[in-house]
Length: 360
Image 1 (cartoon, rainbow, N blue to C red):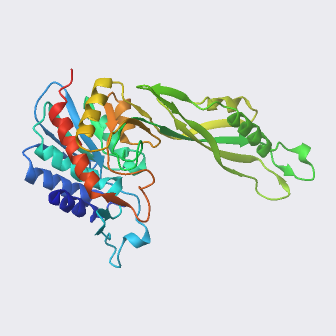
Image 2: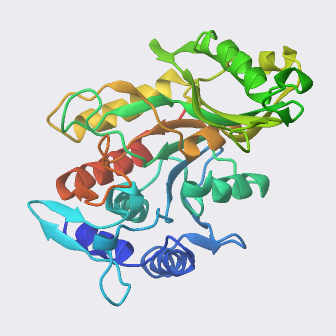
Image 3: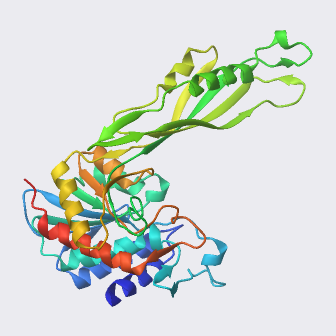
């Protein structure tokens, strides 16, 4: 426990919301000093280490970037504030997700793996997974992965579950174009807001995407979240934009392109973070067995509502699950913290999976 707390404190003390370089270099040097693994820090800033041999590989995956800290999370010198109290470590990045990066580093060091074992910490997860995408484009392709994002407290408070699926996010914009005119003569123009509201009616009537993953039902969502149009109270608007947030599920998407059947309306995708679904029940069960052995509670297979780098890995062909210490609603908050006992539990899960999962 002392080594895990110390390593977590070191990682969360390193600012990495604007620049991940220092955190990545710390991880690289630690791995080179404390393991005999083959360690690289690629041109993007991702840190990847490999040890063991086997036809198939298992990766322990995290990210070392964080969202910008709250004012209370930095001191007068601009350094991150780190506090330990009541069995928890409070700091930006403690829950999301440097605590589990530290647990994965130690598990990677200590495990005698049943196959090739990979440790990977990516940059840019908070910017849409740019580091993970770059690594995949460079050939990163583990057969299996345990991603250390939060999975604690989903089935029961305090229990660390195994997420076998998560939703993705597709953010898009509906653009309605018309023709400007003086508002006293509306028939002389074409009201873009009217076209946009017709498109909103189409979105409102769409069914939410649904699917089932390893017996778990998943339902996405579609919602209009912003609307922007018009230039003055006495001008018929010539343009209006509508933002749509869609939470996607594996294999299913809402048919948002239907809005383009409306005159003057086009639709564009601005961000598309993929969902994740584990397709290997044996792997999911093996990780659940490790999670069960590491705690007194009864963990379950669960579904996460948030996108992670597991989505990019799954899209590229890696069988993924998510196991981590963060609890729902914990990440990105002004009082972000992580349970040190749960971090120790995650370390044990990672080490057990690395040593027991030999595939088929």
